[in-house]
Image (cartoon, rainbow, N blue to C red; front, side, top):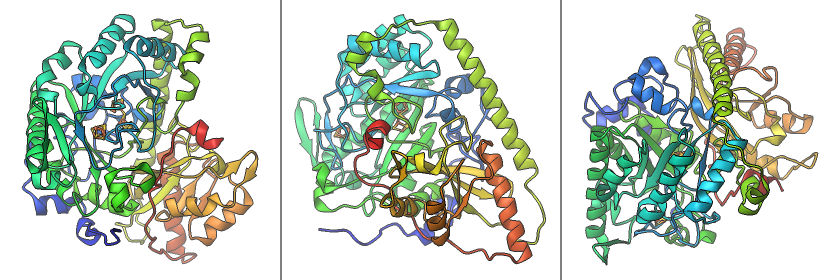
Length: 529
Ligand code: CLF
Ligand code: SF4
C-alpha cells in the first residue's frame, strides 16, 4: 500500500513560530537553555554562544558537535558499537541493521567488546585531536546492554578522562539506570521520543519487552511513554543535558511532534532533533514493506519551523552510523577498523590534544566574529521586501568556510538567509558528482532534486557543465566567496541578490520542494568508491 497523500499541512505549519503558540499553550520556562532560545532566535543547537546560557551549560556543550551547531564545524565525535541487543521493536527498524533511532537505516556496524572499543577510542583520539565526544548509539539500544555500555564508559574514563561521554536510548530502561548514568558522569543523553500519545505510539511500536515478557499494542506504547517521560524528568533533575530525537513519519506523528516538542520542553529537554523517516522496501522494515514514505525536505522544515519557540531545535543531525568516526557529515570509520588499529602506534598525549583544541577555538572565534560583522552590515533599506527569505546550499569540508568543490560534495549545508540573519536549517546528502576526475552526468539530477528549494549554491569551484545545468534549473552557482566564512558569504550573496532585484536586473521567483535522499548511505569512503 502506497501512501501518496501528504499528511503534513505545510500551509498551516508554515505559519512558523506562530504555529506552536496557536496549537498549544507553551510554558514560559523550560530546562537547559530552553529559556534562551527565544522568539525568532536561532536555537541552542544552532548557534547559541557563551552569552546565551549559564557557564556550566556552555562548558558542557561548547565542544560537543551535536549539542552545538557551531561546534560541529570544528569538533568530531565517535561511536563504538558495543550494544547489540534491543528491548523494543520500532516499525522503521530491521534488527539486521543498526538502531535507526540514532543511525541511518540499512547500515551495519562492526560490533566491538568494551575492551576493543576503548582501544579504538584511544587510537582515534591520538589521531584526531579534535575528537571530543564518545557516544554509544547501538547497534541496538545502549541501555538494553547496560553492562557493555557502562564497562566501556568506566574503562574509557580511566584512560582518556578529557573525552565527554554520551549515550542514546529508546528510554524504556532509562529510569532504572539514571543513577548509573550519573555515576559515570555521562553528561549527555539522547532519548528517542516519537509520541506522547500511546494511540499514536501503537502505530510505531508493535511490541516492547518489559518485565520478562512481550507486551503489545497501546499498552506497550503506554509503558514506553511513561518510562520516557519519567527518565527525562529524572535526568533533568540531576542536571544531565538531554536531547530528544523524533522520527517524523508522515501521516502518523507529523503534527503530533509539535505536542511532543511542548511536552519535552516542559520536562527540561535541552534540544529536540526532528529527523526524517528514511524508509525503503530493501531495508525490510514494516514501514518499508507497507510503503510508508518519509517526508520531503520542505515537509520536514515546516514541522521544525512550527516548533520554533518551543524546545530548542537541532537541525544539523547526520543520522550517524553506530560506529561513526569524525566530524558530522564525514565518516572516517574505515580508517579505524580493528586490524588497522593493531598496526597503529598509539600515543595518547593530553597536552597535544589540548593545544590543538586551543587552535580550534581561535579559528572558531574568528568565524563567530566574521559572522557578527556580516550580520551587522547586512541591514539596508534597498526597497526590496524586508521580510524576504531564501535558502542557499553551501559546499563545505568544515572550519565554517565555503571550501569545497561542487563535484566533491556528498552533502550540502542549507542556510535560510534574510536581512540580518543566516540561519543553518539543515543539510542534504547527494550523490558525488565528480567520479575519478570526471563529472558524473547521471548524478546531477539527484543533486538538483536535493537542493531544488534553494536559490543559490555556494562552492569553492564548479565546472562549466554543472554550472549550466544548475542555472537552467534556476539555482545560481556561486564561486566568488571561496574560502570565506559561510554566514559572511551567504549574507554577501544575499545583499547582491537584493541589489539585482532592486535594479530590475532579475525578478525574485519562489522555489519548489526538495527531496531527502532515501536509501542507505554507509560512509564517505564507500560512497566515493
Ligand atoms: Fe553520538 Fe548522538 Fe551523542 Fe552525538 S550522534 S550519541 S548525541 S555523540 Fe549527533 Fe549523529 Fe545526529 Fe546522533 S549527528 S545521529 S544527534
Ligand atoms: Fe531498532 Fe533502535 Fe528501535 Fe531498537 S530502539 S527497534 S534498535 S530503532
